[in-house]
Amino acid sequence: MALERDVQLDDVDAELAWELVTRPEDLEAWLGVEVDLDAAPGASGRVVDVDGTVRRLVVEQVDEGRRLTWRWWTEGPTGDTEHVPGWDASRVEISLTPTEHGTALRVVETPLASAVTASTDAAGGWAGRLFDLQVLGLVATILIRA
Amino acid sequence: MTDRAGRSLDRAGPTLEALADATRRTLLRAVADGGPTTATQLADDLPITRQAVAKQLAVLEAAGLVRSSRVGRETRFSACPEALLDVGRSLVSAGEAWDRRIDRLTARARERAAGAGSP
Image 1 (spheres, rainbow over the protein chains, first blue to last red):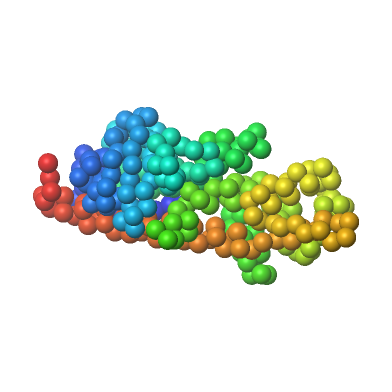
Image 2 (image 1 turned 135 degrees about the vertical axis):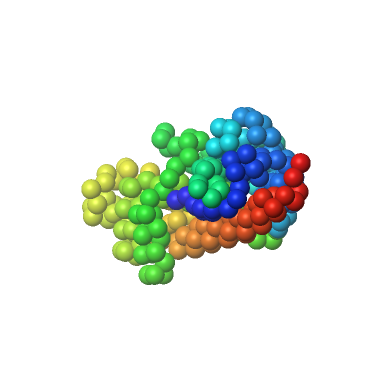
């Protein structure tokens, strides 16, 4: 069950689009009010959202000009820089595709299996999982009945 | 800040993870359909062993999706819609957060494309 958003950025070429998603000054104009994100695999960072929520992040994949992924999680009470089992995370994937008039940007945020649940489920772990429509159907059915 | 749990998709992880398994979904649906019911009854009604029913009910209970209560010598399970509502709220608020980020991104892109804020 991933969140997906698509937006067309008119008159934005590939180079500018990449800056918008990687340059701190640009990121602080939209991703959060304070953004520490270094587009290098394995780099740790931090995002303060407009509502004050603090998230820690680790950059995962960097395909310059095309794709950037990171996993992030809400900062725990100890201000943890490493992910703490039991505090759950999600993965954000941003992909850029050149179009006739600019760049198409797609964001996908996928919740990750919690470390706690994963330990009881051999198929779990940190791999991101997409959840199918059956889940939504089930949720709707039970909520309607409730 | 006060609504942090409801705003972050990351906190929905355990519930979504519990829902990611087809057997657990079947069980949850059966519990929701049948009202308070026992693991034995569920194993009789479904093509799932008593042992697997017990194991998966424990996962659903840990995720807050079912709750158990003792009635005499029986343990009865019932569905908890609140956990699903929380997931629904998390998905909605995480989606709204991205909508706002994308609005700001679009505005920034327009500025930059027009030549403002460049390096």
